[in-house]
Amino acid sequence: MSWLTPADVADHTGHHVVTVYRALESGQLHGHQPRRGARWRIAEPVADAWVTGLPQTDACGCTTTLARGRKTA
Ligand SMILES: [Zn+2]
Image (cartoon, rainbow, N blue to C red; front, side, top):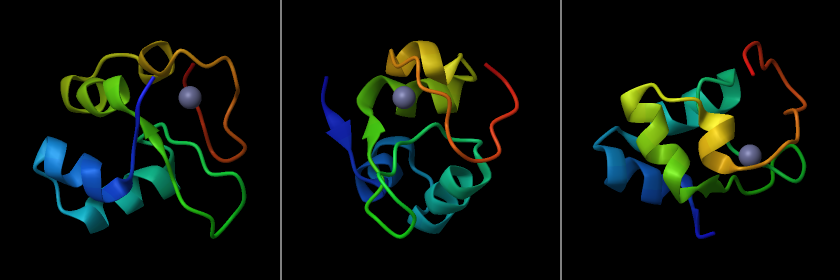
């Protein structure tokens, strides 16, 4: 599994990096952050899943429920 930074996701998807951060903060983009203010990391397949609308948790392969604001499994 390779991990992307928000900047990598921005490059990968063509979104602005600010859009990536907003999506992470709002839970629209499935990312991992060890603690608030720490660096986000996003599993590489999740960037594609975000763009195509596929289930991001499946793409990530993790079974962890995100701490904040996640509505869909
Ligand atoms: Zn995950």
